[in-house]
Image 1 (tube, rainbow, N blue to C red):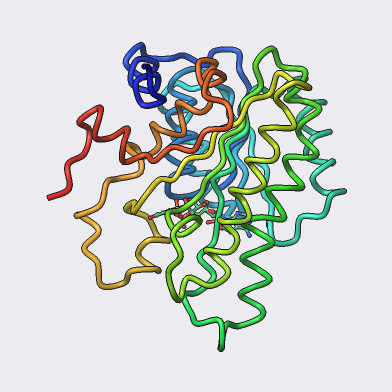
Image 2 (cartoon, rainbow, N blue to C red):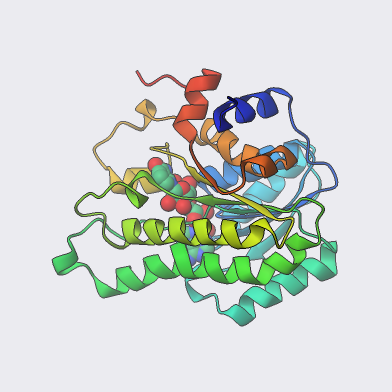
Length: 265
Ligand code: NAP
């Protein structure tokens, strides 16, 4: 029986291209989102870079041009403040400027503080749920009509191990990822017979990023895989071949093991 990891390996080994495709990546200013946007652009995609930090987005823009990728677009956006109207404005902007959207990578996220429920800061709770869950819902809802006009629209979402495994002190972060997993499961069932858009949810696992350093300050980052290797699982989620893996949840570590791209020391 062919597993999703087999499909991922064969698809990635075939060096997929994304020419003529328009793909929006949230969290493109840093970490996994930045690595994903760069890789998509290297493979011919026109990328729309969404994030908060405009200076960092500009750097990614320049890097894409340096590696010969198609000219990207930048959408500076604070997802914590994203209303449905704002999300619809983003959709309209993409429709006017590109006329299409083939893929959407929801990579942005915040940790929001590892603290016990008893003393969890309410502001952190609200912020985390807004960025990691509510903004994902609003952007997805606003962008689905455009994705549905693509011959093979794809959305890839980002979860975490603590979205399924119950652990103390992960607070709103774990709750937001658990909620996201339910959201994606529901969405995948709703899209199955009503749309050409297909979804995948990826758990990157511990990755060498700012967020991981914030969550685990004592950890040596060199013991963790870098973003470009982890981003391959997300890249797969945006290939046309990933349509066959609709609604599945995948661990990037399983892909890295199969490809032999990272061995924990
Ligand atoms: P990161 O380097 O800190 O990147 C987080 C990204 O999210 C940045 O581009 C940031 O943009 C964006 N973001 C945060 N708040 C935002 C807001 N209010 N509005 C717009 N953009 C916002 O972290 P990362 O590790 O790459 O995280 C990427 C995803 O992987 C997250 O969903 C995270 O939950 C998930 N994840 C990571 C790990 C890990 O070990 N690293 C493990 C499991 C899951 P600005 O910098 O522009 O604000």
